Each structure stands twice: as structure tokens, then as C-alpha cells.
Length: 144
Ligand SMILES: [Cu+2]
Image 1 (spheres, helix red, strand yellow):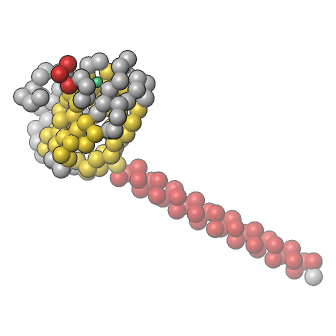
Image 2 (cartoon, rainbow, N blue to C red; image 1 turned 180 degrees about the vertical axis):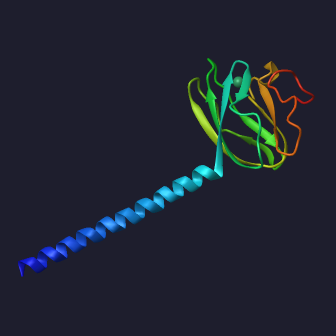
Image 3 (cartoon, protein in one colour; image 1 turned 90 degrees about the horizontal axis):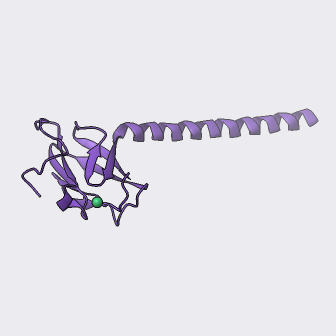
């Protein structure tokens, strides 16, 4: 009698462990999936320039992690193929970071700080297919 109860209890416990393990696998699988789907790019803003952790891009989903390393508040807006003008709401305080996930297509994207665009706080990236030459953060460029 007591042996039967103990066996049932042990079986129940094992079932909980199996269920938890399966749930853990499912969560890990989702996390791995998400990590491979979106490319993280660090965007550094300071007075008065914007620099990116990478300069070459392929079409697909990217998460721009915009970090304000300056002393003033900055903003971030991007425009290009498929993106009519997408902006991180409000301003980013010094030391803070905000992220923006986008779907990039082939072509040229312009990004800038709305407040300090005139001071040259802007940059351009080119996404796969287009020439990558001359995409530096300095210089005025033809736009703006
Ligand atoms: Cu700014």
C-alpha cells in the first residue's frame, strides 16, 4: 500500500520534470530562432556624429541599438527603401539606449538626429547589391 503511493508520487514528480524540460527546450529554441533572425547593430550617437558597429548590410531584419554616448539628448530617425521615416519616439538621454527593429531592403538608408542634423549628425548606409564604397559618416553628402 505505502509502496504504491510512493511509486505514484515519484511518477508524478518525473512527469513534472519532463514537462519543465520540454518547456525549457521550447523557450531555448525560440530564443535561438530570434537571435538568428535579427542582426544587432550598435549605433553610437555623440556630438555631432552617428557611427555604426558595422558598415555592410544585407537585406533582412536588423535591430539598431542606439546608444547615446554624448552629453546632450539626441534622437534617431531613419529613412530608405520601405521605410518612409521611422523614428525612436522622444529623445534619448545621455548614457541611455533605445532599440529599433527594421526590415532592410537593398538600397541606401539615411539616418540622422532630428535635433542636430544641421551640425552633421547624420550618416548613410548601403544595403547589399549597392556599392559600399564611400559610405563614411563624415562629409555632407548630396542630401540633407
Ligand atoms: Cu542630436
